[in-house]
Length: 462
Ligand code: UD1
Ligand code: CA
Image 1 (tube, rainbow, N blue to C red):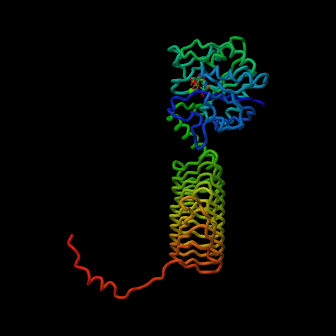
Image 2: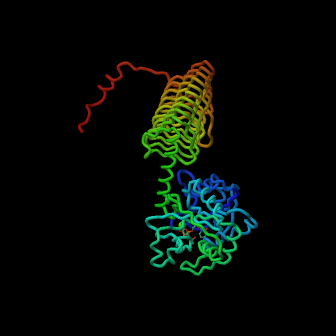
Image 3: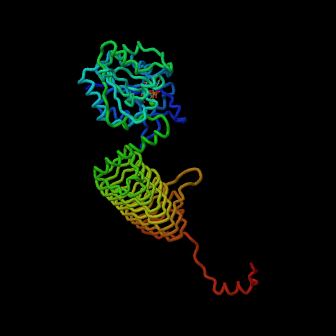
């Protein structure tokens, strides 16, 4: 099947009340139009043309050269929008699927079935219809006495009887290329909205004795078009449910699916366990046996096998097998936890590697740090990696031991097997195997309290 698709995305999307073009609003972490393009690709569509308005640069910036673009300078209606693709599709053979950029919920299988039904019926046009309880706002499918396609009537042009029809035009169609453009040249904006309606093309084809078919689809949810934020949230809910169900069927445990959020592009292995209030975002990949949550957010990460992340935020980092994070820690972009590494409670680390089996158990900040294997970082230790102008690196070699509450003033290196005494502010490298002490010596003043008390007056009232 060598089908082409025309995606209509030139509309302004005014009802979104947004500075962002409608089709770029994300659903489950992916812009609406990227879902549409992915669905078309999965359905086997080879060539995708996106009709954009004059401010289409953002859409082009997102989709890049993966698709072709056609500019519709003025939004004169859906028919006018498709007509803009004529030059690009000149001489094409095979079916052309037309779909709106704001309908991200079609299953690829549905689109494939639509194209196949169109081809096997030898129709010149096939429209996907659904039956809805409330057809308000949609074009109505009007059938003839033989129950076949007669025409599509827009809400604003509908008579009282037509308005009662609950079978609606989804806005998704398949056409044969030549008759489509021939008919598009014949439509006129003589209607309530003074627009060139794509829907009129079907009636024209039919009047010219061409075959027009209706592909009635049982799941009306798939045809949901997003015009406002309420529908955006509805689409998000539907897609999230599908994603959750897919991963649970693939072997992922979700203790409370209702509070488990997995983005469209995330990938989870069997026997991953997601605990309540957990967000797996972006292109995160999680390997088998890892347990994430409760109350965790993991974005654009690679998580190895049997990793534990508890009540933590982990961004753009990789966590190797058997490493653990949390509770209450923040792993910022550019970190890597090697096998069996641990970042415990109330830590923040950024652009930092924690080597195999190394531990950063509590209350620590590490920035731009490279830690070898078998290192232990005491509670309260921080790297002073920023001098107000530049960031500097800290290196802590294999087997080193940094006592509690140290300040490591970068750039600085703690050699292999070296110790740093608790409470040190380290400004010079500590050689391998040495003890670095950088604090003043303790001095005890005998009987100081007694003398101080007798010198001071009795405490004031209140
Ligand atoms: C359209 C259909 C209607 C159908 C409904 C389904 C027509 C005349 N009507 O109505 O029968 O029930 O979709 O949602 O087609 N667009 C452009 N350029 C334009 C106008 C629109 O690219 O000049 C794009 C929009 O960005 C949008 C899509 O086409 O993605 C649909 O446009 P919209 O104005 O929402 O059509 P509806 O009035 O909803
Ligand atoms: Ca619409």
